[in-house]
Image (cartoon, rainbow, N blue to C red; front, side, top):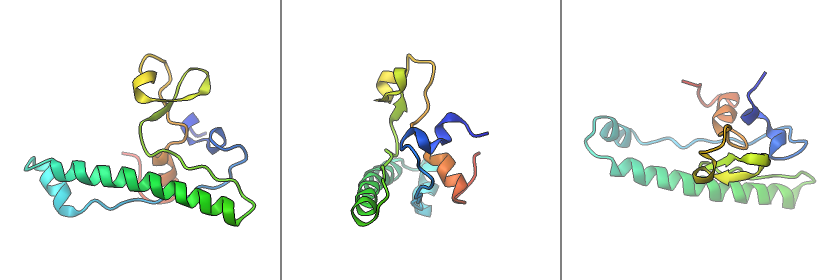
Length: 119
């Protein structure tokens, strides 16, 4: 039994599959970040990854809908959570509610796709 944030149907009724990808963080960026040499490279890479992931997700969804009979929905890579009444809200507005789960967990999707494990 999966947790609520692993339910694709919440975002798109009838969803049966998802497309998941990952960005590889350059070794030097990780080394500098974890050894506390500097943090800016990690911040820049994170910004790049989040912004390009969202743009890519939108383009892929549009391509699927324009070239097939299937519906598609891009999922925000961060900062959106289920609020009261099931509406998606930003993290700033959900901290007072009892449930703070994303509409669909990209981490669970990545594990299901074989891109890593929970840890």
